[in-house]
Image (cartoon, rainbow, N blue to C red; front, side, top):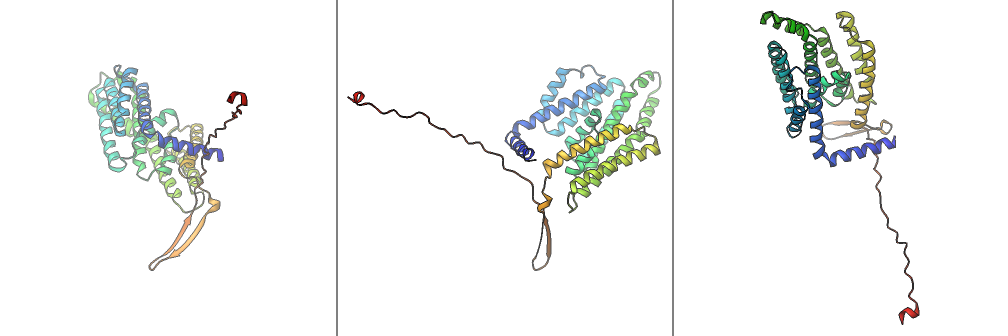
Length: 319
């Protein structure tokens, strides 16, 4: 454990020392990964599905605010949808505008969450987001995670129905609009996932703020069990075809990631908990103090030892 604590201190010092360089690098990696995933999933416009274009745009994003990455990712998505069909582009644009209004109204600081949530679906680890955001976020994080879930399901639905849309070229525009809108709004799996993630985030947030020992660990376990139960019960009721094995494995992985987040954000020693009581003229105060677990990083000292001895000068040499 001591080794892990020392490594934690080294990581924190490294991040604080090179923060100026790490932030642009993080934006570059995030933008590059997001755009490559979009091109890999819905790369209908060949001009955008080009590694040179992706690299240039990602480099530009590294020097811009984080919200600019969301704008670029949305623009890429809409343009790819336009290459598929005008109806898909219009519906995607309207959905993005509504989500942007919700996002900027309730959770404007969760920029990275809006990007990481669809990316977690592509990587097959979506259950990480509600647990982690319940630990480090607020109830408003429900909006940012929900926006990411909607974007993910919208892209997946249109990508899966691309062949059907291409075959409907002879149909009128109203029919194609109805096909996309009805299929997207009637997606029970999306609604169930949003509800499960929302309950998980709020439950984890409420429990981890309780004044009890091991509150964060209890919150992680309770949130993981609640997420599994809601998704399984919803699958029985709405027949959403949830993969039970994928759900269990993904939740176990999410718990491990949440424990790593807890180690870096809230690592305390409950064995040395102290309860303090004091008063003033108007109030009695009951304070529970839990010390953090910290270790001092070993400092290296270099000691120079001169092994050369001064030889005595002989009498003849002096003469």
